[in-house]
Amino acid sequence: MPAHSDFHAIGPREWGLLTALSILWGGSYLFMKIAVAYLPVFVIVFGRVSIAAIMLALILIITGQGLPKKRENWIAFFGMGLLNNVLPMSLIVFGTQSINAGLASIINAMTPLFTIVLAHILTLDERLSVNKIFGVVFGLGGVIVLIGPGLLFSRDASTVGEVSCLFAALSYASANIFGRRFVRLGLKPLQIAFGQVSGSTVILLPTLFLQDWNVISENITWTPIACVIALGVLCTGLAYVLFFAILNRSGATAVALVTLMIPPSAIALGVIVLNESLTIQQLAGMVLIGAGLIAVNRRAAQSRV
Image 1 (cartoon, rainbow, N blue to C red):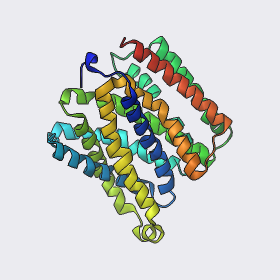
Image 2 (image 1 turned 120 degrees about the horizontal axis):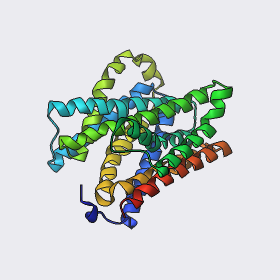
Image 3 (image 1 turned 180 degrees about the vertical axis):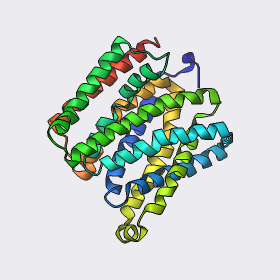
Image 4 (image 1 turned 90 degrees about the horizontal axis):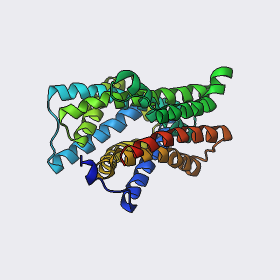
């Protein structure tokens, strides 16, 4: 990764890449929402990560970066795959059975704020600051607005879906902490991406033998198949390429902006394609979580001046 002085300012090209990435990751909620109406949760997630693994393997081979081979690398890949793919993706797909794609993306925006709390507890060099505390408080306020009433007064399917997506965000945050170990392994970014989706594919493989494929084959259409392919090729494989391109050009602060851009993308796609709507309660929760992310990212930007 370039030194700090080599990072590009966020110009038109970087904004274009950020917008494209937010649409791809926002679109993943749409594709999961559509696919889960036809396919079991684990089949969707297996399809997504296995397709991405094949795509990234081809990119690594074509570009001459090579596939990772060391045993210690693959042990880490399996851990990262579990925390960053298998658990959160399965929980989100499960959650979108009962909640809107846009709402799922809003809840998932808590990931950076959960990461801050876990980093304070589990590491020695990432402590809570005043801005971080404000960010976490705003974020938790957003979660209370979104899910709190449901936890207190009902146990309906939508509440279960919301809590499922919240745990997905917690799993992603755990993966962010676990991923720190890759710094010392000397791997290229796309090798790490390939390794984790490959590890996820192996972990999920046994779940395929638990499915009733006769029932699946009777109900399957090209719509969910196209959604799973899009999840693998666009929302995972291509998204990783764009993510690391932005990271290498403009640094972590620029990449952090995509967290704020994903919910609007997911909400817009949900409205256009699925005729979903955004309630005042959901809008208020999104505003609070967004305020928390802005507070945290403002501090991150100031530390680089």
